[in-house]
Amino acid sequence: MGTSTTRLSEAAEATAETVGRTADRVRDELDVTERRVREVVRGYPITCFLAAVVGGYLIGRIARRI
Image (cartoon, rainbow, N blue to C red; front, side, top):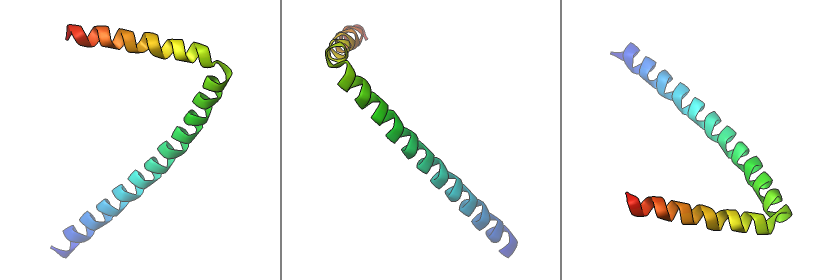
C-alpha cells in the first residue's frame, strides 16, 4: 500500500507542477495580449468603439433568436 500511495503522491506533485507552469505561461501571454489590445484601442479608438457597437448589436440579434 505504501508504494501506491507514493506513486499517487508523485503523480499529484507532477500534475500540480505542470498546472502551475501552464498557469504562469497563460498569465504571461494574457499580459502581452492585453498590452497589444490597449495599443490598438489607443491607436484606433473610434474604429474600436464602432466595432464594439456592431459586435454587441450582432450578439444581441443572435441571442434573441435562441
